[in-house]
Length: 533
Image 1 (cartoon, one colour):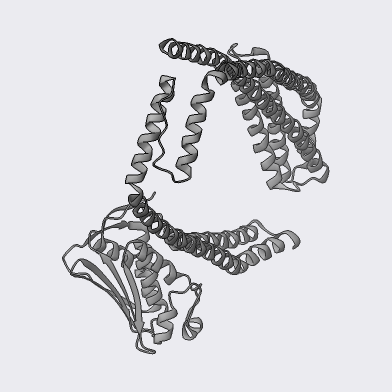
Image 2 (cartoon, helix red, strand yellow):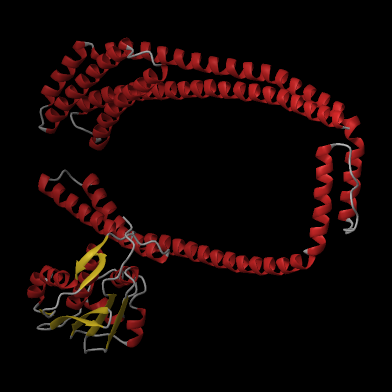
């Protein structure tokens, strides 16, 4: 009996030892193969990067020479932005080649390849010479000196820079293609090696497993049969069944564990029913949470679609103006420098307006998704309101409206984003000035109620109805009188609302037609917000 147990343990240890050795060898083989494969893949990637950058350099250099010749023939620069982009791409391509060569040298650990670097430096000098001549030609053409431009082109052609660059580039491309082909060949060879040796390992492992199964099958048949019979009895809910003593010590302990498990199962059957009830409750709770998450995702998707609709709606006007100004500048008669500058200034103005619109829409979208980006620090509301009033002082004088700050001497400090809060107060004061009457008055008040700071902006302008006050914070909404009284996008108050709500505050608008409007902002006093940069 004891001898059988010892023989079983010894055979088991030997079998698992042999399997462990085979497994470790297989793991080492795969690890080493993967390391070499990663090395070859990285070589291929770097070689591709070098080759692509060299092709870009070759094509852009040819394009540069073509642009120079066309400009000299036409005696004018036909496409100035393309001219400048070409120079940037040329220099970027040289930098990319240099970086890729450096990575290749570091990967191979064989030091700097002086020949390739020297060739690259020589090509860079030729490219810079072509760029320099191009800039000289461009300057001559812009200054109406076509003769000097032709002289410079002839000088460039006489130096043979283009021919020398072409020869160097052909040699370099051939060398890079050779390296890439060599790396591909080595990778394929490694793959063939891996697929060739792998079956031997697998056959060895399968043979060892089969031998172990045969050795143990005869001695373990009775024990396994008893354990199987006991498992069937337990699965049929016969918890009174007991597994008898087995010959092998290991299986004897396993049979005792099965018997103990049967007793424990019988004792804890009622506990299992309680656990099932608790599990059902947890599943129900998780289902509700999942439903809530789905609803949140639906709201986020709805906000995304709404943002895209808002962008397409609001971008029509500035983009139409930019296109119109550009077409007039391009298709009209030759204009003076001042006229072109005026056209560009109008385009820049529309671009700035579009940028501000994008910033506002993105902030509203992030706020709707619960992810506003704020730079939180201590902010003095008194100083912020004083600054906002001073910003609109000149404009108030122009429209004949007085701004009267009533801030008191007590300083109120909140935790928030100073730039965003200043944007809120600027929107409210700007609206008050827009819709005020001649010789009107705008009052900016500040007070504290309990643990909240209250800012009120009051005007005595055209006022608004209760329905207009309710819809004023919807994107792009403008009341009937507001549209006829002053221009606007209808986005200011929605932006202000998003900023205030991101600060855990509230904003409201009230008034009567012809009697002015009152905007109220309520912020938590020294509220601790999480800073999101």
